[in-house]
Structure formats: C-alpha cells, structure tokens
Image (tube, rainbow, N blue to C red):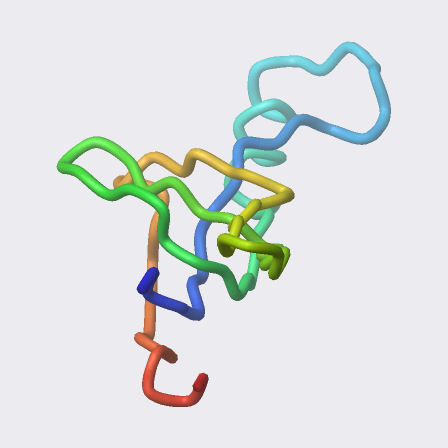
Length: 91
C-alpha cells in the first residue's frame, strides 16, 4: 500500500508580469514573493533526491485489480518544508 501524505513545498516561480527590473527590484521581488503548495497525495517513490507523488489513484476491479495514478509530481526533497503521514486515515 502506498503512503498517503499531506505535504507543503516551495515551488519555483517567476514574476507574473514579464518586465525588466534593475538589480534592486529583482532582489526585492525574490525576497517578497514565495509560492507555497499544500498538497495531499500518494507516495509512489521516494529517495534522497526527490519524492514522486500522485494526487489521484484509481482502482479498476476486473479479474485482477489494476491501480492507476494521475497528476504525478516529482518534487525535489530540498523544496519540502513540512509533511504528515495520513495513511492511518484511509481504509
């Protein structure tokens, strides 16, 4: 069984408006603008470099059970700020 987790991670970002900035403005934007993601998903793989997360899981019940996963994300471990195991809340 895959682990279900809640995870918070900082995503790479760029300014919404594509304008030129001087060095001070560029550095100020970098200090003031963070893009935090809060997500729940199943861990499909985890190692020292990244975590592979799926937000959707589907089980097709035929003669054999087939699991499929959707909305995959490979998140660098250094981007993760907080995580909580939610596996005990699912059946």
